[in-house]
Image (tube, rainbow, N blue to C red; front, side):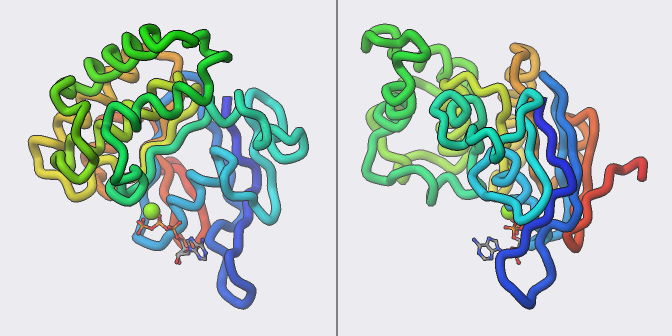
Length: 230
Ligand SMILES: Nc1ncnc2c1ncn2[C@@H]1O[C@H](COP(=O)(O)OP(=O)(O)OP(=O)(O)O)[C@@H](O)[C@H]1O
Ligand SMILES: [Mg+2]
């Protein structure tokens, strides 16, 4: 489904590469974990795999097509199908928009392709997403700064999920959450897995949760990517 082949990425000349000859494959519907020390390149790898950061060398393939060689990153359908929930939802969600607006924003951009031309259709999809992420509709009129960290994380996940991605990267979905909220996010991930149709890459420091949620776990350190079996 999604494949990174011999990926190398260096942000700055003279510094060691953040990714070096890194290869990873994720099947349709599979959940893969990515662990490793801070600054090890996990977020970078996620961004390279969904096509928002271009690798210096190597290729990313989506459904067998070379993403950069085929110009897929310029295509709306490709961008919709490859989503990433960024590490810090407080920074990535526009603080001035209400949660209802944040959830509707992406749907409006992709409404024709998703056959969501009426506001009523979009509203019912948003209601379903709120249900999946266990958020109360009472939060819809609030802004991201007016809800808890766990609720904000769920808003960010609902926003990405509403677009029905085939590949979804969750970057540190548990960080800065208490135990109860972590459990809530784990339940949400299990619900996504049960629904099927989405390949997941979960980036996390929490080894215990990653082991419980992921079939395969990669470790990224000093630019080198290994599976636990290597
Ligand atoms: N846009 C950028 N420009 C220059 N350097 C960057 C950029 N993004 C990341 N880096 C550097 O690349 C390295 C890897 O960063 P990255 O965010 O991918 O690591 P990470 O494993 O996600 O870390 P953390 O666990 O702290 O989130 C770091 O040294 C970081 O400073
Ligand atoms: Mg990171």
